[in-house]
Amino acid sequence: MATTKAKTKVTQGVTEAPVKAARTPAKTAAVARGTAAAGPRNHVSISPADLPLPIGYVAKVDLPSGYRPRADQEYMCAEHVEYFRRKLLIWRQELIEESQQTIENLRDEVRDVGDEAERATRETENSLELRTRDRYRKLIGKIDKALKRLEDGRYGYCEETDEEIGLERLEARPIATMCLDAQERWEHRQRQMGD
Figure: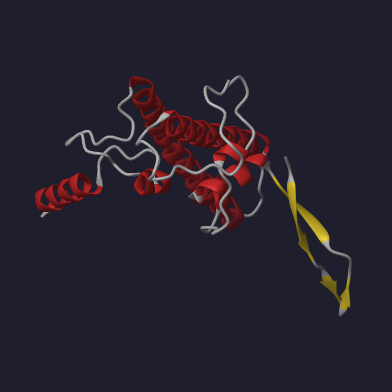
């Protein structure tokens, strides 16, 4: 499922035919989630029901095209659970693919750079990339915990208060473990301990 975006190239005042820039499935999934991996937040959102399922995953519930959880449905009904399961699995798959691409890029990169400044720049870029991938590794751990909570029937409920986290919060942050009030109390305690 590759979509394209047209770019027009202008050379010496002459406009050439549009050049197509491919959007990878991982990028499409990132746009659907509105994550940092997608770049700046994009207001166009694709439902996980419309994205290809991860390899080996068999859907437990068929979701209609364009499905979004609605407040008028029972909270964490089978459709909600399937929607968030797909969202988390697609996100996890994308993060793993990006990490593998980083490893390949670092492996294939030419190590013999003559200029000291160029070498320092490349080392800084590699360091930033590796830190990003470390954050992705931690995020994958949180996604795995969210998937486990889905299987246990605890997903969508606050770990502190057992209240509903809420569909809007889960849509924005599918790995959320606390309702907004509990999260604010926790952050307030953290600030007090830090002062």
